[in-house]
Amino acid sequence: MKTAKELNFEEAMNQLEEIVSELEHGDVPLEKAIDLFQRGMQLSQLCSQKLEQVERKIEMIVQEDGELRKKPFSPILEESEDDVE
Image (cartoon, rainbow, N blue to C red; front, side, top):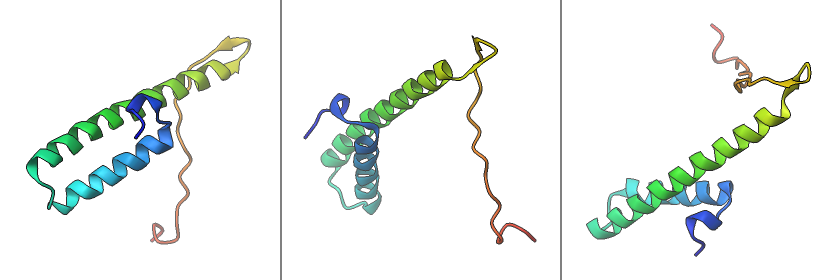
């Protein structure tokens, strides 16, 4: 098994989802649950760090008028037919 620092974002998220799923079932012995929780926290921190790195890279790429301007990412959400009343 790779250490947390060796994982890419997608691998870390997949492992985190597996851990959450296993813990949600509730039939995990206490010692294993603690180990899983600790691993999950490490993976969560890793994902957060990787997202911050990507955000910084994107900020460096976005330039207006020859100078860097920080722009928050705001995805455009499409309204589905279910949302319209």
